[in-house]
Amino acid sequence: MHTPPPPSAVSLAAGGELTFFEAGKGPLLLCVHGFPLDHSMWQGQLAGLADRFRVVAPDLRGFGRSHGGPAVTTLDDFVADLCDLLDQLALTEPVTLCGLSMGGYIAFRFAALAPQRLNGLILCDTRAAADTADVIANRHRMVEIVRKGGVATVADAMHSKLFAAVSYAEQPTMAESTRRVMMTARPEAVAAALLAMAARPDATPQLASLPMPSLWLCGSEDSITPPAEMQANAALAPDSRFVEITDAGHMAPLEQPTLVNECITSFMTSLEHR
Image (cartoon, rainbow, N blue to C red; front, side):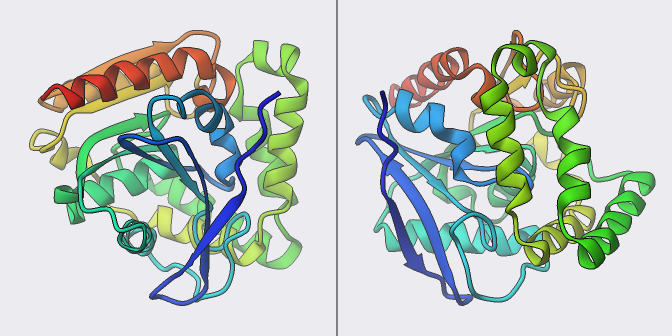
């Protein structure tokens, strides 16, 4: 049975500590979790890719074991934290960033703000478009609910949409563990992330000039960011590949780690030969 790696932490320039989990050696894969989750959604990558790559999975500011410091106001704050982490790891070579859902939104901002730090981008179950007016209004409603009554309502609403039907049926422990992670998220971090996501810019215009290769992965049963939308996004990027992950919903790396890891390995190996 795989033993999870021990946590490490760095002090952030913005204040507080950023906890991260690391496994393996080789080209670095920086895995950025979705909302309102933590590093544990990347357990299949920490375990399954460490023989080829150095996998680093942080808990974003305010989530998981990361604590202290001010609440984020924009997704750019998360980007600054990730750059801070890379600096403190003394990484001078470009890395591959892999982000799921909110982590994908952060990846788009990272690519816009610090493209020189990336040699590849992996977008999982995410979208380039900004929120619609209805989604923004719903996020603001959720902020008020979280501030008044905690995270349970958000966790319950999201949990029913995260996984493919086969995942709920055949991997109930995984689904329940994910729900527990959401239930333990700090209300102030959840509220801040909701507002930051609602305010994010549309990344669609940057896709045509994306300066690094990109891999787009989407669960075949993802109802939050459907495969057709992700495939259309990928088609706008000049050096891109889209793969639909069978029998997965919005959490493809967690639901189908073997398939996702094969895609990541192929992509990162191709980067080494450029």
